[in-house]
Image (cartoon, rainbow, N blue to C red):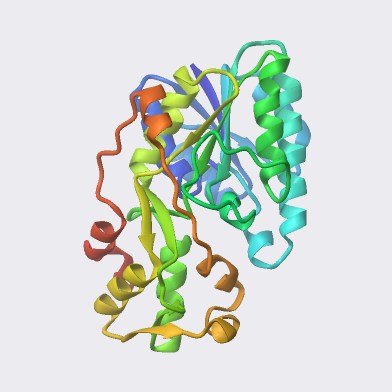
Length: 303
């Protein structure tokens, strides 16, 4: 299968590429910089230059493909506080891809997050059948699912807040480590009992391939191994490796300690992947979050 991948040079994309290639698929990757293009070409990927605003490129590359995995997102805009702009760009990109695939029966695997359930104040364990009416990133998730009615075998992977491995350089765990180094304290909010689900990058990459190959149209999937690891456990593991204390941060001081990340540090997001595992015969095989942190790769400092 000829597969067009957006976000091909990113954290998850860098694991999805070899997963697809090992299964015999040909990969076409979107690259927005010379460096990304060179890195993809070196891995045997056919390069299409552009970004999420290059709607014609997205459309044409999707039309030329047998399937699409849409991973890219404007994380830099999100971190800068422009959540609306990032979400609008993602929605427009998905529509451009969908216009090229409509009526073909080809697969489109989109990306969302279990964290959207927490931000919408969903109570209890989040499962694949929980559907939100709309909101940040949810509009794109819902659109992707609706594309099943337009002759596209669409599915959405909800990623957990922590997709972890040695490939993870800018996610939640590196962010917490950076804050702990800067503050001299590995912090958690209040009693730290709020939990995050997690999944290993290599398990997540395999799920993307399985979704591309087999997911029924209109499927919501959870790329979750650990259903919930408490922020306190994560902070304590980070503190041990950095040699700094783990300590409670009062909720009223969270913004001062965590900065832009305070909102995410506070989420409580238990989530299950039982339905996904049964539907696609997907079984996570790699270390869980705390074991992965204890492997030490997150704390290596480049010379």
